Length: 139
Image 1 (cartoon, one colour):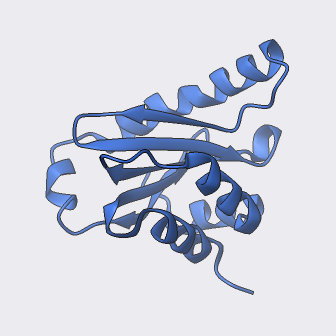
Image 2 (cartoon, helix red, strand yellow; image 1 turned 45 degrees about the vertical axis):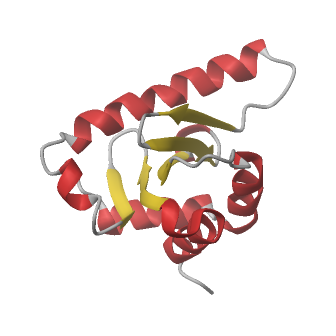
């Protein structure tokens, strides 16, 4: 069986190619980097990654709120920054839910983040990602 983190990285690389900047997974207490492009690493040297991940953890609350308020299922969020697009989604249910965010260099043509979500949903094993957090946690 393939390593669950490798499957995530492969799916994101296939989607974004050279535009893939970084990939992180997290739960309510821990986080881990799965991929960090060499030229991006120096740009986050002065960033408190734990604080940034804490902001992404608000997605647990907003996801539940959207699920309660909308007739359609929440699947992902995309934020546009001046140099990159940030994608976030969650896998699993309840306390076993694992979040993932990845960034991609901005591009003139729009990206099909629905396709990325479907690709990830096809390969992600939430329990495997949770185990990866146990092994690779940066907290």
